[in-house]
Picture 1 (cartoon, rainbow, N blue to C red):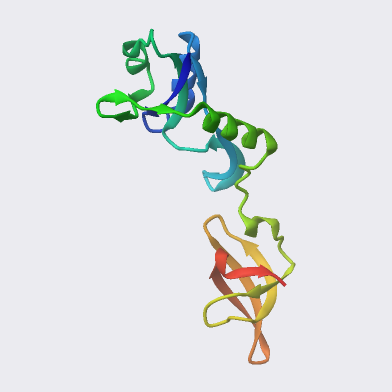
Picture 2: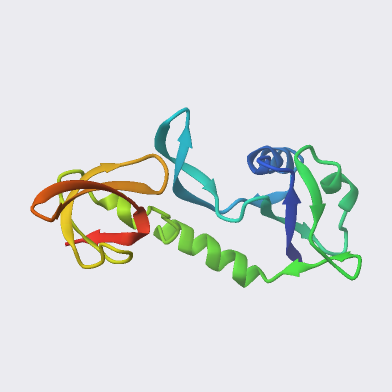
Length: 166
């Protein structure tokens, strides 16, 4: 009988651990999602681990050899309960895999669907319920909105979660 186990990896070494476990003949699975990544002042979509620093590995329980897994480059440890590796229900792993294939883990930020020039409504803060034109989506979680205030146009920098499409 094959059981799945959660493998704790070294920081940012999930893919490395996955490749090395597969190379050793283990069945391994790294759930991933598509997310925005910032690097060198540029943002792009990239596949990221759904559970940072964790992946799943399958092993036959009666003949478990844990030393090869623990000494695999990129692996830090196994998730344990009472000193023994804790099994993860295979139904859970298969459900995560099915949801990933359906595209349920697309972690696109809702504000990224907005484009510069569109009208937005401020949902919180001192400008709540004001409508303005979106000027810029900054690299961080900030946006610049042009609001009509006291008879003139005023630029306001707001947190991205404070706006929605008007």
